[in-house]
Amino acid sequence: MEWYLFAPTTDERTCGAYTQTDGMGPGYNLRGPNSVWNISNLKKPDFEPDFDCFMLDKKAKLTDIISTSIINARGFIVSNNLKTIFDNSRLPSHIYYPVVLLYKKERITNYYWLHFIEDNTKDIDFRKSEFELTHPLPFFRTESVILNNKELSVIEANKAANPDFKVFPRFIQLNKSLDADFLIFEFLYNKCYISEKLYNDFKTNNISGIDFTPNISIS
Image 1 (spheres, helix red, strand yellow):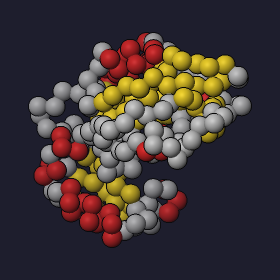
Image 2 (spheres, rainbow, N blue to C red; image 1 turned 30 degrees about the vertical axis):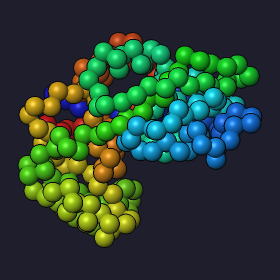
Image 3 (cartoon, rainbow, N blue to C red; image 1 turned 60 degrees about the vertical axis):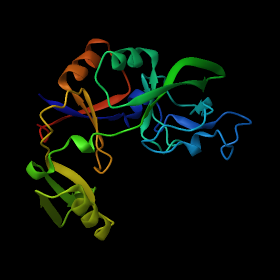
């Protein structure tokens, strides 16, 4: 199966502005108990987050995925169309929360926060996988550390010892029992990947606002 890197687009010809959100609406308390700032990564919130509302940058365009830097937890703001496709695909454990967007003084309500509560690190056969620890910017990649047949704890220890470096997959062997269309690996620099099936669904339905890059490092 072919896999693709998946991320909200940074191409402003498509999204208008990156990131597309520009803070929260008037009166929103980012330090309040239900604030989106309090959503933990890869964990189900123990409160009902307040998603009313995200202000869009004045140059932003509405796309099927909305880029934001307001929430640190792993997830995405997705349209109802994109949610429908995800609902018919195999994703890691997740929750949807309705969100409101403020776009050109209009309240848009057909969007959701897709919140992941687990990743796929457990689905990697680390004994048969290989990773590279190097600088995230190609111009600065003067050296790297190759990590093969290593457990995650060893990879994380090497990462901590090289704080300017990030982990990239050279080859990932997934556990044979895994049946998935969407993968998240929190310890990697490029974290999200989609299956060829999901990629084709996006193309067929003209889903906008997403960058795809073919990736041959996952098997």
